[in-house]
Every structure is written in C-alpha cells, then in structure tokens.
Amino acid sequence: MRQRPLSLITDDLVDYEKAMDRMAELVGERQRDERPDTLWLLSHPQVYTVGRRTPEQHLPDPSHGIPVVSTGRGGQLTYHGPGQLVGYLVVKLGEGEGIVDYVREVELRLVRALAALGVPAERRDTPPGSELLTGVWTTGTDRKIVSIGMRQSRSVTSHGFALNVDGDLAPWDWAVPCGMPEVDMTSLVREASAVPMERVRAAVAEAFEAG
Image 1 (cartoon, rainbow, N blue to C red):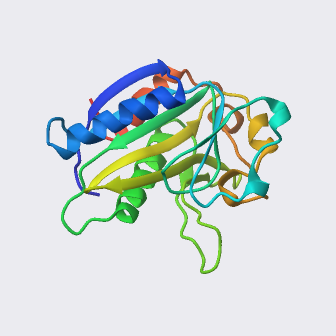
Image 2 (tube, rainbow, N blue to C red):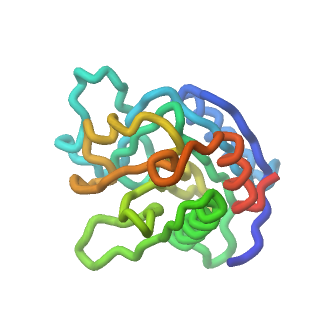
C-alpha cells in the first residue's frame, strides 16, 4: 500500500446536513490545492442516508422517527448514530487512480485499524451478479462492522466510512442496510469488548497516517 499521509480533523457530534456543507467546502479547497489530503473523524445524531440506487422497499418504517436523507455518494442505505465513528476522506487521487482503487485502500486501512483494536477483519471481493460487498467484515463471526460509500469529483474523493463502535444496533434492523436483507451488522463492543472512542479514533488515524 502506498504512503498517503493525511491531515486530521476531529469533531464529536455534528448534524449530518451541516457536515455535508462542511465536506463540500473541504472538497472545493482540495480541488483548488488550498488544503492537503484530509481525514475528518466525527459522529452524527441518528439518521439514515441513502445512495442513488437505494430502492424504496429498503427504507425504514417512518414510525421510528429517524430522518432519511438522500446523498450523492455511492452505495445504498446506511445508518448513522451516536457510538459510531464516521470518517470523511477528502483525497486527491493520483493519475490513473480511480475511486474503486481508493475504496480498496480504505478497506485495507480499516482492517489494519481493527486488528490493532483486537478484531480480526477482512475486505471482500464481490462475486459476479451479487450486491456489492464494499466494506469490512469480521472474520470470526461473519458480520459487517464497517460501511463504506464514496464518490469523486474532479479527482477528489468525498464521503467515506462508518465504523460501529458501541452504539445501538437496533436501527440497522429497521431497514435494509447496504442492499443486503440478510446482513448482520455488528460493532466493536459486540465483537470484543468496550473500547473507548478516543482509542478507536487513534487507531483509525494511525492506520490512515493522519495527524
């Protein structure tokens, strides 16, 4: 894996739509070479976000009261909430490097971070004709622990990943995450033990060479 040091921004709980406005500013700055490649670590209040291909039947029952927001990233439905670490990646890709290449790198870096936190994990290739297996999966229990959805514009990436740390997993069961009705979503606390969010942030930042 190539060296790719990133500038790190950290926040606690940020409203999703406000975060999207800020991410758009970061992307514009990177496109104009006004800032270095950047990793922004944060969390969101409860929200479902849906990609361009999310079918209506995968949406949650509105009686749960969690808002649903359309987004321009790839991928399908994802849940965000407290106790989840979100990472937005604003990175200028190299010549001949595509978004799929970078997503593979993101997966591998998150596998490295999870190993440091005591959770063996892996990225997976998608069999022909199957729903995309983008993300990171636990090797011991065969559950999905990280969701990834990204896009690129003028060679700069946006959006990123969501790593479940110790938040409520029930909202994942109220919709169809990632286009996969049978997927079993998990978290660090479910797979191993309670890990302080600050330790998770540090492991992820180290895996992404961010500081």
